[in-house]
Length: 229
Ligand code: CTP
Ligand code: MG
Image (cartoon, rainbow, N blue to C red; front, side):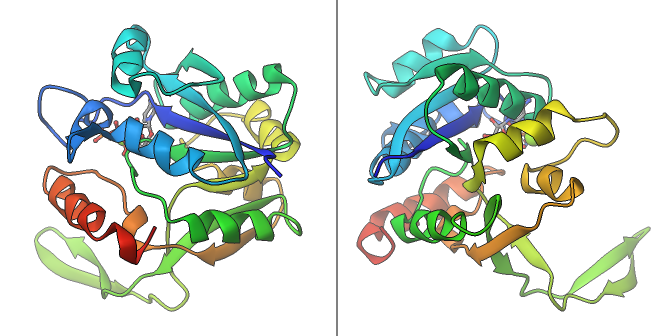
């Protein structure tokens, strides 16, 4: 069954990662991050195709980075991640097939197949599902250079992507966006409508490439691919 369409959001500027080129176009072991993300998603038997969201004017750079990998659509993103996802979802809706979507950050190049398996299974009973890892470190507020209050970490989770949704539900959440503080992921938009979002076990391999040193960490994972792929 190939019933899921993957939206890859790659329209950010990658400011925290530094360097000349936005991080999604930079190479990990010789292959740009977006090509890794595309391969990781398309390797899964349930993924029918990819809708790619890129910055306005970056289409040629994206095509070069994909080096022949097919996309169902390539659309311009917006000024925020939320706006970029919304553009991708509208492109999925316009395709008119597939009622399940995976929404994924291009900045997470490596995706264990088992995580997509878990998301797909959870989506049978929920409108949305997200991969999470429990927070391990002590969490505290910083108070002008001094230690502030400890935040109890019981039950706290780090939320990753890909996130899986029924298309109609997540489209409704995005179309109904009323403004205000920008959400950092899509599951919280669905939850704001009162829809429960299922949790599945995430994976450290999915941690986002945010800072320059994260490339080294991801190369180590890639070299150990047999242990997670
Ligand atoms: N993203 C997007 N459109 C935006 C902002 C972000 O498509 N307007 C995408 C990024 O390309 C990335 C994902 O959302 O794949 C997660 O965002 P983040 O890690 O914050 O990437 P950037 O915004 O590019 O990085 P930074 O915040 O450091 O500038
Ligand atoms: Mg950002």
